[in-house]
Length: 620
Image (cartoon, rainbow, N blue to C red):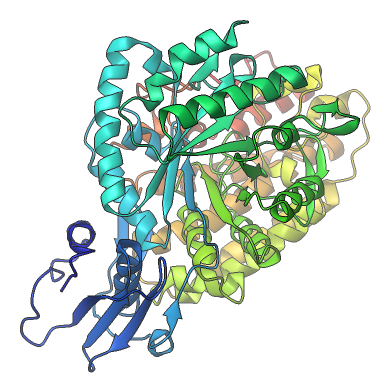
């Protein structure tokens, strides 16, 4: 039974929950029932009360609180809202949630709690939110965010809307998406780049030339006129910067123009990473992106970190950073100034680093939990999300929920996500996260298990680094020293032992359980492959171990890529679908071909055998 405040939202909630027995209306028969009552508990809060053995009441004062409470009541019966296209529904409903009753559930993070669905990448959300088509996929994403206690969603705009006909179609679609999201209680943001000079991924930008004010006046209405966005996010690209005074003037002009066009919309700015991009302004030497603090004080800083690194531990050389202590200090400085910053880490980097390799990396869950645990007074928490297959839904699931109510440990966060069906895997996945933290973060082995494409190699030559760097086969051939062989061998053995234990787990046969086991298998195979490759070069080891690891990895990929959670065409993810990004393929295209593995094998053959076979670039 719904309340007047929540009726429309809860009807959508029910329609998108894949359980035939769930409906809106008066209780019937002896089934379970959830009554929703309007009660001004607090903003986005709820209380669940027992009305008997099979009936509960959710008291909430707003539309989000009501939906959170109903989601929690269903979770108490065994439901898990794991991925936008895949809800776990137990075969039998049984109540397990006594500790959740009679207490006020309220958000730890009072501001934004949500996702940036990074539509500049060819991920599931790109096809749902940006490409013309059915809106059902977008509605499922909004529904999933709400059910996991989120209150905000945003995505960056692409530059195809500069074409008038495309803009008209995009605007019509986006107006409908905004209406769907607002009905559910979500706020919605749109990202845009200010300067074309740093635009690496076909993002919509406000200026490509010298006359910034004229271009701003022409382009900003494309994303503000008759579009009820609640927030606009200013981004500044990567690797290339502008003069400090021009930067601040442009940020201020853009903020003023947004406030004039959409007075209720908040303006955020992405505080990106890049250790080599530094400026001196007013006598202070600081990272380029920190110039935002000298702009309009109404701007909310979205303080970014990348990959599975966090604000408190080693950053491995990502974008040149040994750690992100400077970003942590900036965030805390913004808090002290009362400017309510948002922390903005990642759940997948994508390019040549994690799910595109592919690997299963629950170390992301550990890092996102550590960040939230270490930032108890955080005002906003926004996850950069870039794909959900291969278990990457887990980090978004945990991050959304942990920003609402932080569990005592990341193990408990994983345990909730895995429910009863995957419970036997909880300790093993937690052990994998800890192993990856020790080996990939602390010992800096991450760049060896990650891939490298041709663009990364070109960047090295230009002194531009994104993901952590490694000693390459070419470096060794030119005489570079290498001391990571033994640790890589140990890491490979440890991951292989975990994969063996994963295969032995007593799990029900399901896509969820197969995903867990395949994740262990492919990650262990990747470690064995890269260790065998370096052993072949350094020790003359036979390459049979390398070929066997490649075969094992390919088998895991074939299993997983025939068993997606994604409800759309699998070719959207693994093929070359038409899309508006700079990439002519889906986000798992390189993973599907094991392109980074094949590239490394070809590089090794060129060095050891003099092979002249073209080396895959793994980029275009």
